[in-house]
Image (tube, rainbow, N blue to C red; front, side, top):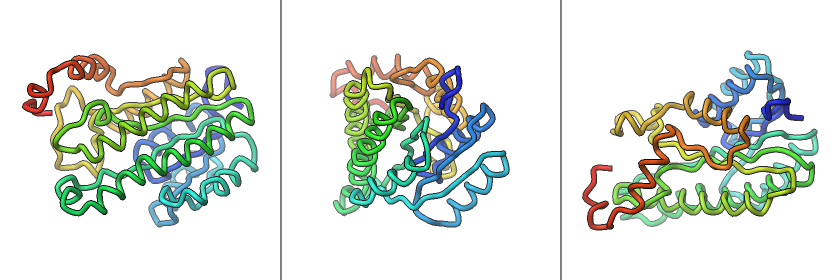
Amino acid sequence: MQDTFGLPRSLLVLGGTSGIALATARRLIVRGARTVWLAGRPSPALDRAAGDLRARGADVRTVAFDALDPASHEAVLGKVFAEGPVDLVLLAFGVFGDQARDECEPAGAVHVVQTNYTGAVSAGLVAARALQEQGHGSLVVLSSVAGQRARRADFVYGSSKAGLDAFAQGLGDALLGTGAHVMVVRPGFVRTRETAGKRAAPLLSTTPEEVATAIELGLRRRSETVWVPGVLGVVTAALQHLPRAVFRRLPV
């Protein structure tokens, strides 16, 4: 069960090699989490992530999970929940794609959407039902500021995150009063090895560790929406009301 501050003792990470997810798991282990399930495609990276968390004192187990195989989601997540209560499910998988390539090769765009949206809808619904049946727990969904308004530079990725964000908000409303809770996390540009070389305004960028800190605070407050950094909420609200002709000329 969760501790008195709303922090989990057990967590399931969907996307077990995600930098944000692993930073969050490390932070929650320090705060008392003891059981961690890392779900992802079997790989040396997944094994290394599990080893790192074990060295920090957690009981870590891995489970094969493929976002692009929705038919398997119920069995995979069911196996985890059958082992005992899960206080937190962190939905952290996703791909950026390559905007220029995906515009020319629509199959690439479909892969982005199927991973970031279709796979997340399937896994999110399965996880939500399991949390509801046990009567407690949080589903934390990693969305993105990119989903708040389509940009020329990444509208394929952004549209997939827009769909995910709307789905997660609706799911949170559906679970109201059940004991289960959904928190949508909207980071700005996250500085990782995967995004090295890409530009972003320093004020609107963040790190996996900063996102992890915001997730912890959101769990303590039982928040429904978390922006990282916090100023993004204000900036995005302003951008949403700009005329389209003005918005498309901004260097965002």
